[in-house]
Image (cartoon, rainbow, N blue to C red; front, side):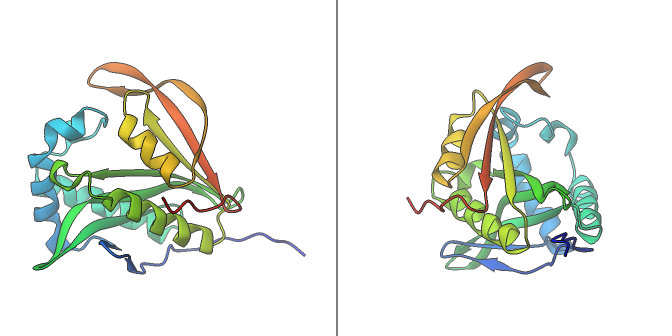
Length: 195
């Protein structure tokens, strides 16, 4: 009997934690999300290659449409990270599962928060929620790559039970410079860290 799994579409379930709610982006989220990106452009551009190409609400909508298409094809998903506040939910960033390979039960994760949302544990909670969701769908291996200069992202991966596996040389071109990345992975059987 085969133990093959394959999802035609990644479920659009809302994932809720103590401080964050993760859900698919909706049209009404595009302008606030662009505002977060625009207000955090220098912060985001330090370690990410895409902020220079995201210059309008329409650019955010285009990215969201491509993530939705990947979810519908079963090979990716994006959740908006929304902070719970006294006034409701505030969009803080995104967490993306890409390159889902069902035959190998693996995926690659990316995440980011606007500058004003960092340092409060939101990314930690979001990453833990997404890991639980993807492992519950049958994935076995999740990977994260982070610039060797991005100590906060490396600390986040380690805090969430990822294990450092090595360096990927010239992994990404950021601001015209090739940057090495640290590679982290977590397996479904790895313990979930709670600190």
